[in-house]
Length: 98
Image (cartoon, rainbow, N blue to C red):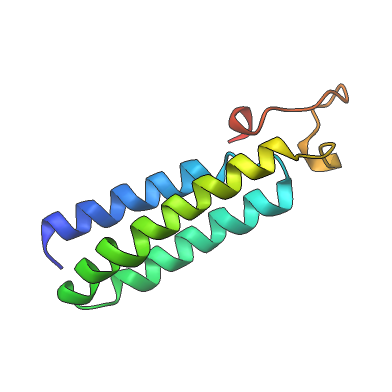
């Protein structure tokens, strides 16, 4: 794997995980963090040419799509689940958590 492609994959992974942590719902948040890490791990096993294609086509599109999903989730978010509450019972901001 060439160094620029590796750096691009690392950067995309950070962006995907950061975006995934924007979901209000615990289940969505955990699913998309795990899915992002799994997708990037699978992309690391591809050849350099396939990785470049992945970065140009699928990776960037997945990031754009996830950003749209986070916006919709925030607009129509529901009450926080039990796992998203602080010890005093008040809701926790998803960015505070991890």
